[in-house]
Image (tube, rainbow, N blue to C red):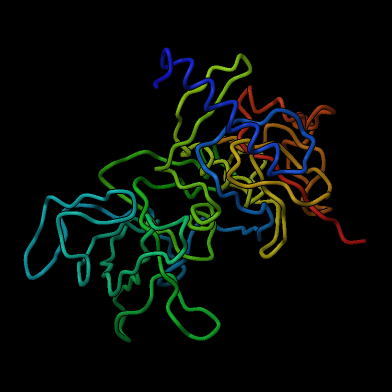
Length: 314
């Protein structure tokens, strides 16, 4: 037997989802958004100061062109990126053209491709990407402690790499280019934190009206949060490796710690702040960000996407 109407059916789904999340989490922050996900991730993670990796001579890759691409001894002009998988070419051995932050270009070649083994991330593909040097083709993302190449996740669009300027750290929507987001750097970490920008989930407002919305905003808010980009201008106010607690109202990441509340976040930076992440690293925008009511879970109904907590060592 079906529901009498779509709105009624959707309302029941939203109520059931909220009840599930309330049982899942022991937090008492109030009425969270419902979610289409049934497996939540723990909120604790390591932050970072850099959006993405650095390549030859300290340069950064601004964006990678989707077309044209050299593949299988021919030039293709019909390459597409669906989520994290390339369509229209055999990606192994494919050579792309990337723009560097000094205006020069560089060739990037895909050496390997593998699918994430994690059940929640079967739609995430990792690529070993190299660039040419006098010593041969070297890993774009560098290597890990064991000397193995770090892999990259391709994401459509690119980011403004500016710091301390209007628009710094912002996501730039452009379906003609993409970003090779390196493992262990912020853009990729936010994907693996559960905020896959192509995914969608149920979001409800205070009136109980529920719609399916993209997680692209959550992903961008995550990049601001992990870098402690409070002012939303690309400037980081933290240090690499600091442990933070990050959670949301969609049931993707849940709060399991009783730490100091830090801030609320959206795509543009901090919505409000209670405690700075690093004592002594005070953002220039702190005066207008400090709010006594910061951390109220109901703020999720008014634009807040993520919450963060910190632990200050005595």
